Structure formats: structure tokens, C-alpha cells
Length: 367
Image 1 (cartoon, helix red, strand yellow):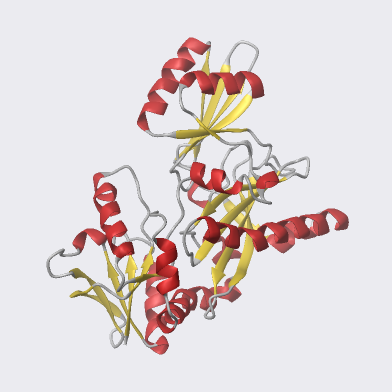
Image 2 (cartoon, helix red, strand yellow):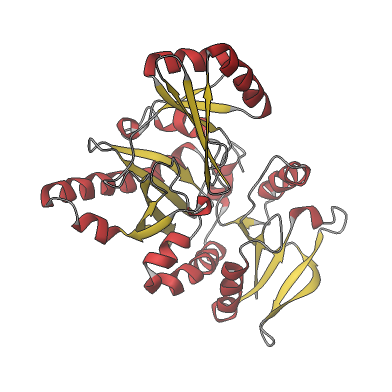
């Protein structure tokens, strides 16, 4: 039987999703395991983790060889455990006897540089590193309103908007589903705050985009793309994420809500809806091939697309470890497909020659 391992930094993360995958594994001819990279014994190449017992429908503690197919669901933070696991995962990705469903994408800045000379360039917000405080202040003076994002950020954490008023600077962020605003009376005070912020983690700068709906709620379109059991890319679905009125985030983890894409599209004038559909369709048809040509083989991509009030369309974020909340809430009919997809693609990889895929991976390493 094929061994299918789900790798995460905590055995409690995404429990509902992992349980559903495990329940579907046996009919696919697979044994399902869960493990943490730091629990691999480098001498025996065995790991202490959990195996799904198909009789009791429960996870049981087990020591087992590293599974031959790995589904990487590790979400890294700034903590020591994340830093400990990163080199272990790089080592796993280099092993010839292990196949990853997808090999991940680099940080937001590397992604921007990879895409800016492609046909998707017009859909990218201008992006540059926040190398120092002086650069941030210059951009704010030029644009009057900018956004700072962590280069390695996810789930909307650590995002700030800065707005230059006549004599003051307004800084806003969202933490624990609450909007937090701070007014700096002058650049000197802002300078101190920026020095502290930029010393903690690398940031990038983008112009502020007016991505709100008629209720002044931040919103975007979340799309899930995946490979099927034949290794072909397809769209699983799309939904609309809404944030709080006056907020800056639409992420569900930040307290946002969601609605169906068809509901939103039907509210638009017919000509505008057709235009949006064509533009989004073009982005989604080009993106996977461009990414795999620039980086590594992938299994799935979450794409966040913003629509500004002037009708312009923007690629806001691309995630190689996307969540499924939006789809499960707006397209419950695709549940079975979502749970089976990793298993069926893993089976496809096990039945095809992966030497070319592995050689492709050699050119770069990424998490």
C-alpha cells in the first residue's frame, strides 16, 4: 500500500481537513499518516507520529518510516520550532525516494520579481522592499497612502496602511479582529515606530489600492486551483471574502465573511461582469504555468484577486498552501473533490516517472 504522509508543525492543525483526507485514503489504496518534521530520527529515518486506523476511524500513535508521498501543510512563524523544521524539510525535499505533492513558493518579493516580466505584469501592484525608513517615508510622500506587508507574511498578519494627512500620519492595522489606529504628529515620531517595525522582520511596500465594495468593506476574490488525478490544472471554485466596514483585511482569520462569486457577479452590469470573467479567466489560465516554469512543481494554488472601485483588477496574493474555508462555505458541493484531490494526485505521482520533476526541483529550494 502507498504511504501518504501529511506534514505539519502541529498535530492539532487543520484537524477536520486531515481527518477527511484520512477517511478517504483506504479506497485510494493508501495508508495515511501525520507527522511533524522535528520528530524524524536522522539515524533510523523513522518518525514518531500518528497513523490513521481504518477500523476505529481514529489516529493512533505510531513509529513509522518516512512516508513515500508527503503533503506539506507546514505554516512557518518566527518561532524556534519553525526555524528548526525548515532545514529538515529542505533535506526531505532533496531525497530521491520521497515525492512531495508540491514544493512550495518563495516569499512575496521573489514572487513579484518572477511575475513582473510576464504577461501578468499589468495585474501586479508595484512592489519594492522596505529596505529602510527613508524609503518608506519617500514612498508615502509620493503616494500619500501606502501599505506595508511582511515579505514572508500569511493570513493578513502584520499588514499596515500609512496615510499622509496635512500635518499628521495615520497608521492602521487589524489585530485579533479589531481595527487599531494610531496618529503620529510628525515624521520624527513615525520614524521611531518604523525603525522598530522594520527591525523585527522584512517588509515590502505597495501603493494603497481602494479594494472596497459599495458598503466600504474590503473584499477580494479567493480562487482555488489544483491538479487533478491526471496532473492537469483546474479550478475548484471561487468565492468572495468581505472584511469589516472601514477595515483593511478581508481574511476569514481576521473576522471576515464570505459569499458566492455568482452572487457578486450577478450584481454587476452585464458588460462589467463579462469583462471581469474574461480577465480573471486569463489570469488563472496563465498563472500556474508561469509559476511552475519559474519555480517548482506545485499541487495547488490559492489566488487572491482584488477589484478596485475604478474596475482595475489586481493579483494580491498567491499561496501554495491555501485554506479551504471560503470554498467549503460557498461551494459545499465540492467537499468530496477537495478531500480526495491530494490523494488522487499523490497516486498519480506514484504511478508516473518523477525523475524529470525531481531534476526540475534541483534548480532551487523553497518552502
